[in-house]
Each structure stands twice: as C-alpha cells, then as structure tokens.
Length: 107
Image 1 (cartoon, rainbow, N blue to C red):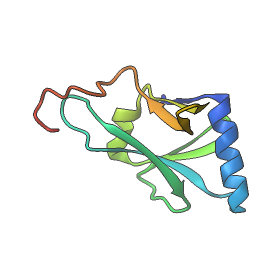
Image 2 (image 1 turned 90 degrees about the vertical axis):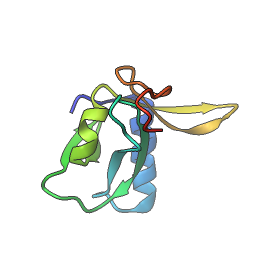
Image 3 (image 1 turned 45 degrees about the vertical axis):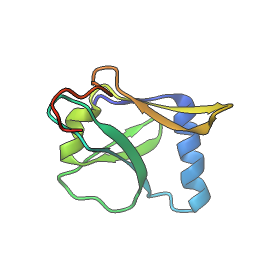
Image 4 (image 1 turned 60 degrees about the vertical axis):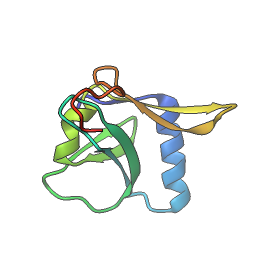
C-alpha cells in the first residue's frame, strides 16, 4: 500500500486508540461513492475485525486495514491531522485522484 500519514496524524491516532484501552484496534480507511473517473469520498473508522482478503499494514506505529475495493483509490493518499480555526480532525487527500467534478455521470 502506497499511502502515507503525517507524524502528527499518527500521534493523534495512537492517542485515540490508547484512550479506548484496546491496543489491537486498527484504523479502517475506506472509499465511498467511487466511480469510473476516479472521484471518491474517503472515510475512516476503528476496526477490530478484518478478513484475510483485506490489506493490513503499519505506518508510524499505527495499524491500518483497507478492503480490496478501496486499495486502488487509496494509492498515493495522504492522511494528515489539522487543528485550526475551522475545527480539528483527520483529512485524507489524494493528489493522484480526481476529488470533484466527476465527468462520468456517477455523482
């Protein structure tokens, strides 16, 4: 998996998992609403169960799981953590994919 995560995001994810007291939790990264032109909406959640078909890997000490359908859309994705005037939270950006202006009629 060629996805990256900033150190700040990894630190926040580890803290979030530690607060739950379940060290075996992984971060599930997934794609919703993907269509043929490459446009996709990204999401994340906590997961403690996954199948052998799903890809699991560690980045900066955080375990991730990705379903087979989402893998291609997450190639080149960058996860970061923002803390600013407009709020704080995780962001997923993928400079290699179209994020708006879907031309295939799928959205």
